Amino acid sequence: MKQLNVYFTFDGNAEKAMNFYAACLGGVIEFIQYFKDAPMESEASQKDKVMHATLRAGDIVLMASDQMPGAPVVSGNQISLSLSFDNEADQTDTFNKLLEGGAVTMEFQDTFWGARFGMLTDQFGVNWMFNFDKPAS
Image (cartoon, rainbow, N blue to C red; front, side, top):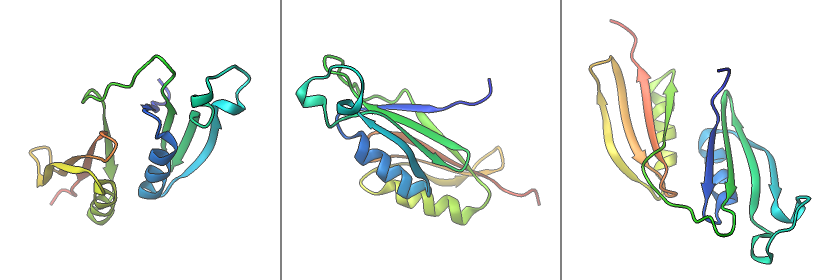
């Protein structure tokens, strides 16, 4: 496997979510296509929804779309995104940005594997993990 990309399906707010993640992660939305611009028929209610979007922040790639009609989005806890950091300051900064409108599920703490680790669920119901491997002393 060369690369793993995370693909989100949102319930009509994919563009808002991707803009939020771009701001939090310091990334850019490289591509966004709406159903109205696709070479296929779509329902009138779907025309301004996102058919596909790609966000890049360094080596991180997030992809997303809004759900197709008749295929409802079911929020769950089956996906967590794990971010690794080179320093504690960036870890804390990104955590605080993604926390906007969300909830902490695990406060930062030192772990048995030698890292500072914390978790949150963001305003879109996505679970995030934050890992900073501390330098050996």
